[in-house]
Length: 296
Image (cartoon, rainbow, N blue to C red):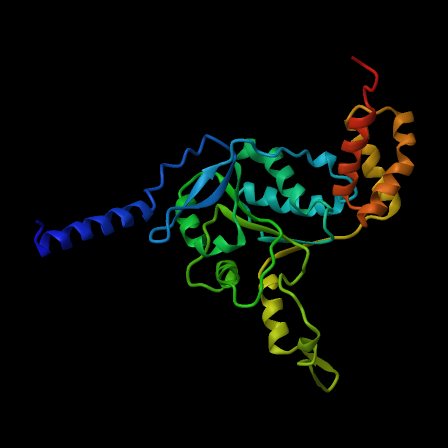
């Protein structure tokens, strides 16, 4: 029969075994040659969560020349990226505006074009932005140039990632490394929802307008991005030009492209959007149904 001490020790062994199962294992060494893109991933249980850079095995390749109707935006972001790659001063960038207009595609296209010159991408979820200091420490001594990419970035009030990003951009005694730029995309210019009540805080002093503290706080984050690039909805002609481009890339001839025009317009009406994404999706569908039809 076990003594009380033996029973206590047996229980402690069981508790320790469960804790060990929850503790995150040490992160494996990063294989920097495995990919040009990485994801920041959390691993482990509740008692021991660690982050690590995970190589992306199948990188989504994008050619900048395939992005139609946003030439001015491409030139601005690409110039900033070239400055960064060449070791010259460059700004963190916020790409905002209409959905499906190519904001994230520009970032993917830049990676494809400049990976051979040392450009790398790290994709991070907004909830993991609190780990920015850890990421900076991992890459600070690397020779590559890293874009930290956060797609579709929006915050609710009080989220920890909001404070972490604000501090990382401009507001801490420490700073990001010289080989890191933050590129973010969002449908909102100020990255947070805006409410009518907040406008009531605005004060008028003489002829000057003084926004309320809530509005100022929301503006302050986006202001810390040195480069703002705006994207706008496409009109019908721009949308059809995008459709023609993609149909041509899928092997459609001139007559087939012209025949697809009415269906392309109907497709955009059903989706309630004339974005580049919608045009690409239509072209894939139409080409899949018509190109090579009848061939065995």
